[in-house]
Image 1 (tube, helix red, strand yellow):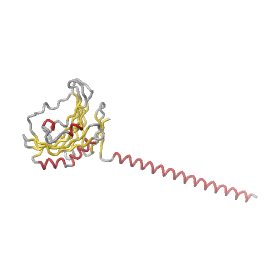
Image 2: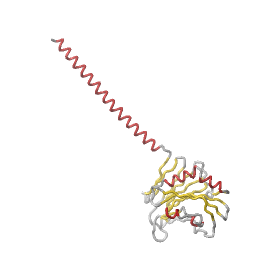
Image 3: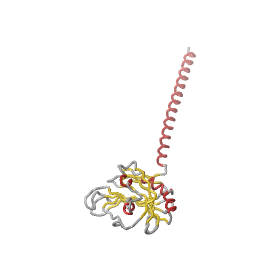
Image 4: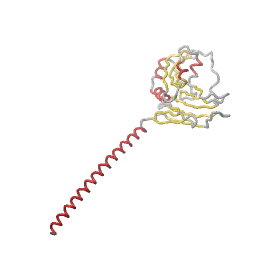
Length: 242
């Protein structure tokens, strides 16, 4: 009788061991599944932050954002930027190209100075000109172009952000003032000089910070075809206004 009880007890023990092993196996499978799922999520997050781009935010008031390549060095200058102010205020990003030859200046300015009146007697001839709508900023577009300054006989290359309708009206018949002020866009309609402007400048990284200019049309075309200019276009097209 005792032998039978021992056999029954051993059978129960074996069953318990089998159930415990099965339970551990099931728990291990669930843990592995969750681990792999978490790993994939982490890998995706890392990919999102390692796509070669940084995100820049401008102004607590206007909340503009744009993306720029990590190969471009960014310097941010920020001061109080109200809708109206008795003093000039500025929110500016200066982005230096990887080869350190050019800078892209993206600015929000209140009561700022813009270099005085345009010389309407200056003459120029517009050549390559393209526009692309900015998906994240309503009624705004990017323009990339170059023109020949007939007074200096130099070829100047520019990038601009402006009202879509205004940029689409630019043509080879446009005068110098229309062309040279494309990079300046008024964002508010306040009285006097209290308006906030958005400005884009592409400049040589030299002591005079002049616009990129060249002796020949081929050189100007090469610049707008360069990786630097493609990066500039991508940065401006990435602008999002909330």
